[in-house]
Image (cartoon, rainbow, N blue to C red; front, side, top):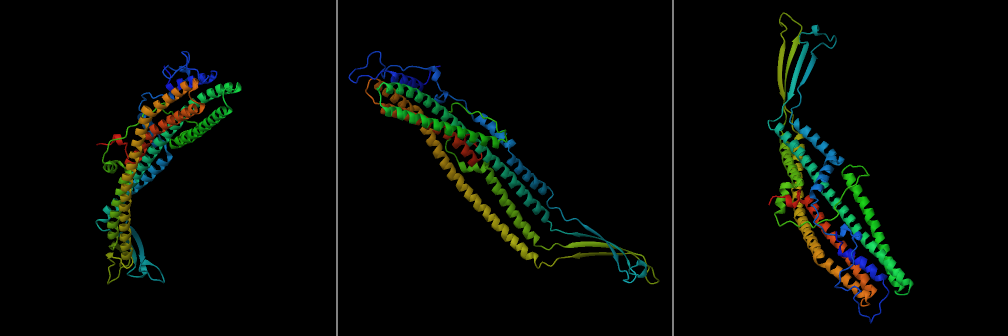
Length: 458
């Protein structure tokens, strides 16, 4: 496999610095490299992180990782349990209060307490039942069913947020690893240059400043690698937490990533209204508030209580054969305080409904603004990655190659060569950042719309 131009430049640069210093007036000979001649190849120095092969779409593997996180995350499990609790309560909502049965030892003399000592004494069995208005049961069920629906939508929203966080963390981990690979490649080249410059410095061919600048660059690259290692540990720990995985778990990321093209324009608000669970949750809360208003108005009506009793008599006289007695009755509460409480409840639930409407309006504004910002960052990152890949990085490689050729014959100074190397490092890092940013914006669009943009129906 041929090595990349960057690798060839690094090897040629080390060879050039190891050569004796040329005389400025001498023209390059046929044995000296020129800008038009091919550079020395070193297949062993090839770094796949700097290549740009047609990488496989990592979306499928990432989708499996997200599914595993949603299935294993304990926080989501707790939310699901709470949603099931509300669903169970909704299943039995609207049931009337239980009837009450009473046994009464009634109308006995206070001095004897005997049933046979007074003709009106007896045992009375009484049953009573509070009544509810016909719409009460339906309204009670409606309130709890809508609240259970809102809880289910909240679980879906939490799962969506988790999926987006997993994708964002995954791509940040991939970016840290790719940046580490690029930095390691430049560190190897810098160490080769440092050895070559040190040899020329010992014979007085170059100044000490050249040696010191390379040492600073080497130390800076080593420090950057330590930062990338720290970022990898942090991001791996975050993925392990999301998946409830062992701390020793590892997660594979692609060695090369292609730019994710931004989606075409669409009615993002309509897509979000169809797929975003938070919008469904607010709609369920609005319906629950409306049902609670109706229920509060129904509760303002007095609830009558009916009863029936049967008295078993035990005394018979000449004028009273002692027949058993039956009684029926109804009672209605006087709404002196319940009416005020009901009116307060109605006003409270109406205010809650207005609050839900305001939150939905704010969410809609956030969705529109967030998608505008996401698409702006996505398109800029995609354009930047294309510019870097097709124009800037090839131009920087050519600049480094030409500067190398000029330096070997005394037409370029060490500072120009050093600056060309730094410029190429910055551009390679910028390309990785731009490419991974396109995938990060895709993950943020998932959290905003409730679905990946490319999966939404046109």
